[in-house]
Image (cartoon, rainbow, N blue to C red):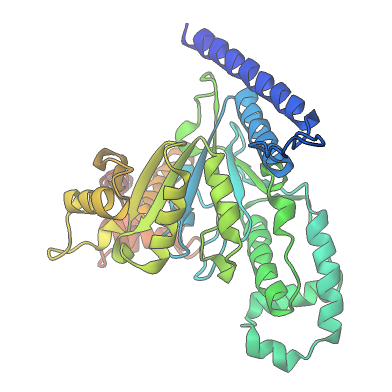
Length: 393
């Protein structure tokens, strides 16, 4: 009965969306003003850009309805723990963590039953290939000494520059966590390099959600629930301070407005900072059009002199978010603890043990957080103790 009701509601929503599209098409055919020799010019309350924006919004909603897809947009600053939060929700590491902007382009992370190993699809790669051709010419002509003065050239950037000089294009398909990390890091370094060489990055080519990169992977907590209708997709949005690109603010606002719900990730240690304020303003600009929730990350850094959970909820609800969210929609958390605990439980369920910490460094982080600083390798062999520690974490 539940499935049938959901199907009927989705069909009615699709009918109404199609009707709205037809009305927009009629508006497109109407003149933007009423001509006449003596009659005054009447400005109408719509324009071609406005109609085009409405078309994009309706097409996005139709796409979600046809797939019964819920798109949860994740918004946050560079250091708030956005990537860690997404990794915790997925249950495995699908996004890299690096102490610099990592979301130059919005990225979809879609729950795909049975897809144990993450795969990234980047079908709309042509604008990036064109950018690489432009950068290749600029690198040939530029003064490298001057470039090092305006750009931090680390080993990743050096490898990217070598790749551009050799004319190596981006792929449309990446399988596995490490190739995906490399692709996403390279995309973000491209933004930095383009800015340093005074070349425009093609952000506008990725304004439509169907053009942005998509990672497909099975979310650990949703495994085995294939009989339930619907699909959950996370949208990793560029923060307002990502890569020092102020024009990303418009893209952020558009992506938030088109989501099914918004999850804001704020830094518990920086709640009143300028960077977190920019995120709050972007969320407030969306208004009441989408459901809003807030994760206050890094709450594990609370001490006896810090605000407790209730005080944090009151501060955010009443002062920082100006009453547009209730305390019940605010959750103080530690995304890192959540990620480590979920990753450990996933490994225990699938492999019966944790991998050696020498091979996967997250195991050492888990042991420090769950077992304390005095943990020993022998402790990892006590599976019941490890399972209990993960549940407690």
